[in-house]
Length: 247
Image (cartoon, rainbow, N blue to C red; front, side, top):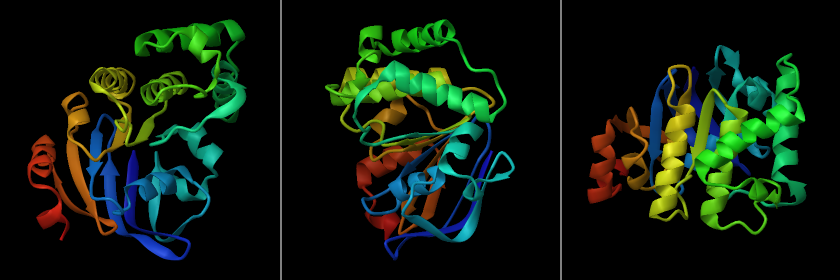
């Protein structure tokens, strides 16, 4: 589904990714862990097409397409979803309005008919109920006045409504208490753990992986993958830190 080969990228002339290679197949969940400054968020932004992140070498294909040749909105329509470490607030724009416009814009690019208001609200209610958000909250401006946990749950609602093929989740566990962590983990499993989808889960901590069991855990250090293992690797990192591995 996603194939990254020898990816090099820089920000403001500073080299961040330095030859990163990674393959995700349908049905797989991959966790990426690593010290601060290793390039984890840079990887997510490069894949999503955020401006200011320049690819200087390498290739990325997604479902057989040259991902780097697509504009950000085309990547989204192709099935890529980015979950932010710090979800932004959008005053004056309701969640419902934002999500319906986003979903129907993607459907239009794919040649699909737009969802009616009634069909969209039904879809939104199912996802909101599953994540413990009321429809009243979905009618509020995007993330405005939400707690950290509510923002992350709201983002999982967005992911459920958009229904992507590949979710790139950048420290989704950041700022979550125990109950919210379980809710978000259950949401990821419910929405994305299917044979035709994949998840790239970026995290600092092993705790989310108790709920979202990864098929592979990768250590990113110095701009490249330096070690790959199973779930036991996350426990090792939790016990011993990144020192010896990232050296």
